[in-house]
Length: 69
Image 1 (tube, rainbow, N blue to C red):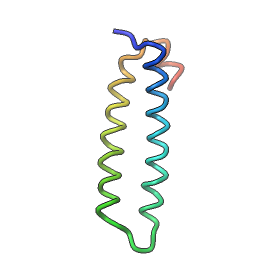
Image 2 (tube, rainbow, N blue to C red; image 1 turned 45 degrees about the horizontal axis):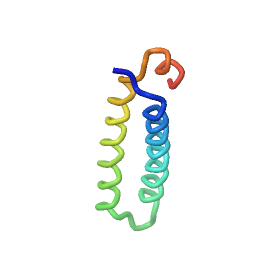
Image 3 (cartoon, one colour; image 1 turned 30 degrees about the vertical axis):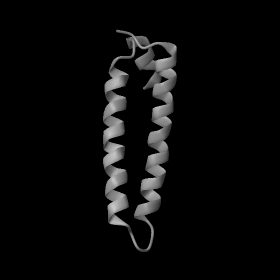
């Protein structure tokens, strides 16, 4: 099974969302009074999303995986 162009576009968008989560996670972690519930929620979402991206990335054709990495 190969991902279509739209799937690769979606995967790129998801990777952008990871960068947003990373920035948000860092912002929450550096606040003077850290909200542990929020920090844990962001971390769980980050872990889930990066695993899903990894799974989807494995479905990329080999030549596109080399370009993305």
